[in-house]
Length: 378
Image 1: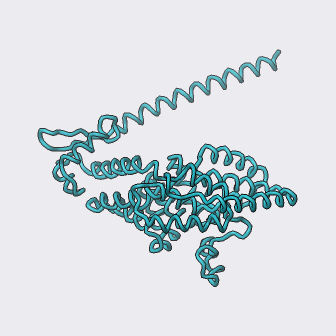
Image 2: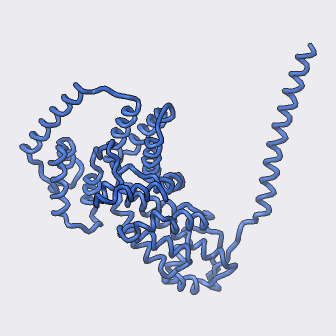
């Protein structure tokens, strides 16, 4: 049984989704949910109940006494008129903030572990405002502290934080390694939900993992299968993943559009990379189909994906000139011809390069040995 499954069994009496994954020693500060709601409120292409989202934001602001963030939303972040600043409310929240800061300064006494936890809290401020340069700087500091004495729990928490940072900065390969590995040990509910981590891991995994790894680490992941029916975003990315793995090409583009709308655009970490992700997934699925054929007619290929020949011709033309697809289009005969790289030739040149490197090292070693020997004789 995985750590996650064991944690679920232990907490099953509570009934609350949040407490199943909660870590009592870490508070959800700042509350990531309000940041995500504010982000969605700013997106013109995402369909939402605007009044309901605004009301939920105000409720969190009041409950958690978020005076500076309240002012920031009203005056800087949200479009003009979306949220009006209530000066009386702001003044009251600011007063409570000052009292809390004064109280904390009087009580401050910190162990090594507590220092790391405080750095995690500061880092979450960077995630809250999606300032990834700030996040990167703080994660580097946390990494140094953890290497000097971080426990297992804090190392796992760091892995999740770093994985989301890599996702937000388009390092999907590292994000996949970290987030897929975090699924069984996730406790960072103060940063995001477990459903979100599962979705992020699926996105990064689909983008970077090879076919065999994709099946073992994503499609057949017990943690992901357990959550499949609980989250619409996870359902969308999972359907896209399965359609690619099973070569269900007619379903691929519809699921790709669904993923773009349900997963990428509403996510503050993925929205900026949504077009890039869609483009690369089209390239990936084209390469997978073409890898099975020496030649393939444009009509057959377009029919396989359920798109027009003109669309396919134009889309392939975006990838062929820069060698992102190893093929050429014969428009006279209406076919696509694959031209796979000569692997044997590439392996030969790699062998020559490695051999030259080895000879250079041996020559340096021989010279060092002779020099040492002459010194001894002298």
